[in-house]
Amino acid sequence: MTAALVTAEEPPAPPQGRPGGGTLRYVAGKLGGAAVSLLSVVVLGFVLFRVVYPGDPVLAMTHNRPATAAQQDELRARLGLDRSVPHQFLDYVRGLLHGDMGTSYTFSRPVTDKILESLGPTLLLVGTATVLATILGLWLGIRGAWRRGSRFDRTSTGIALTLWSAPTFWLGMLLLIATGQLFPSGGIRYPDTPPDFLSQAVDVAHHLVLPCVTLIAVIYAQYLLVMRSSLLEEMNADYLTTARAKGLRDDLVRRRHAVPNALLPAMTLVFLQLGLVVSGAITVETVFSWPGLGLLTYEALEAPDLPLLQGLLVVFGGAVIVMNLLADLLYRVLDPRVRAS
Amino acid sequence: MKAFWREFVRNRSGVAGLAVLALMVALALLAPVLTDRVGLDVTRAQFPRWQPPAADYWLGTDHTGRSVLLQTWWGARVSLTVGVAATLLSVGVGSVVGLAAAHFGGWLSGLLMRVTDFFLALPALVLAICLSTVLPRGIGTIVLAIGATAWPATARLVRAQTLAVEARPYIERAKVLGGGHLHIIGRHVLPGVFPLVLVNTTLTVASAIIAESTLSFLGLGDPGLVSWGSMLHEATLHGAVSQGAWWFLLPPGLGIVLVVLAFTLCGRALETVLNPRLRVS
Image (cartoon, rainbow over all chains, first blue to last red):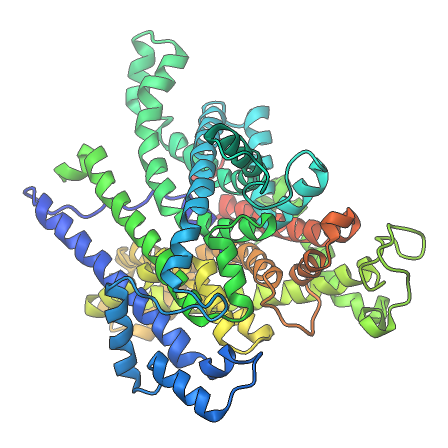
């Protein structure tokens, strides 16, 4: 799940810009690629849950209630499961285009509604954690690389690697035990909080602390290591010697000259590592019963709730594909060297 | 080889990692000799439930009265086996795809790299969850689910390195002398790519073990086997956190951290030895 450390050491390959401008062509190419990937996710989800799945979905749905053969046939017809596989696929895609991802077995409600309900809490958790982890990771990475091999560098890299080696959910459970009654043990708000905005916001923030800290602890190492190696690459560059020769203070050389150049690959990586954040969110939300997409995934895999899992695969996959597309486009906007080549 | 070893020994954290790994593997292998498997059986639990560490059960007992130490010990076997097996699968697939894409080029390369990039972008845990849900529960499924999601990183790495090696003149010489594909890949490309694959393998085992623990924690593991992840799954199900049973949570988690950290340190040390540019002068 976290194979990213391997790739993290090398900067992402710059997108291939065609000579002679062609921004439009570049954007069109990227958009086309993303569309193909999105379609592939939909096909993959369909193949996994409708073709590979060995059991009978209708039996999975009715496994707690006795149902006659006639009732099962009726259910099959209602879900469109009596048609041929290609026909079912077309039905599924048609539904998807209208925002219809089928009905959840366990909740007996449209999958789309369930996913939309859970989207907000996940965005809040993942967004807060990513922003804070990025700031923390970049800051520690810059300080470590600038004084490479110092006690600070060794300690911060060591701590980061240790936290990165720990399973997210385990860190969360330890935090829960260690903090005792200080923070709520789960959920997003208490039922008896007054309905005015301020009390609600404070309550949600109070519930957010532990899941957020856990998620940060696991993902910031990534940003630290990337920023550190990215800055190390720049350390011997000639322009830094020039800046020093001009008589600039060490601090200014770092802030104005080295960091802006090293920041670019690191920022791109923030986007590209979203898969890691997603898997972190799934386990953290499970431990803290945070009512987001991750907890929904956990609830879906127990039954298993096939339509819900299929919808979640499409949503998670789609989110990462869109983020990667943004990273590609942003890289071109931010780095003039890529445009010129 | 001797020079390699001398260089590796100089890296203190790498040696520490290797020592921890050797100890863990030895203990895991000796588990059937030093301990009795019967203690893992729920129906024959011989201690009181939820006991903190004591002389008879050094790491306390769980919700059924089984020794936590015994479970952690046997859990190491499953976690290590799954980690290594999944890694071999993913490194094997990744290497073949990467080599083929770089060596043959053309439309094959384009197709393979598109597929690789697609799987690289997908969130691995989500795909692994979906795979383990639709396939029958068991250790084979876990290995397959992790292997199937971890190979793209290796494929990219191997492709890049193969391209770099194949650009060198001695490959051209071999081609001119009439070397076939198999000869060139086997005799000339593989030796150049191997060191990187080795580093990558070490680091992949680390993430595969975390992946195994995550899937088992979510309840997707083999129900008949004790692994570190499944211990934490049981702990959550039976309220170890609200009981304050830290002795049930610490050992399996520390086991994971130790093994993963050891593999990571070994991998980074290997990388430093094999890539002289990274050495601190």
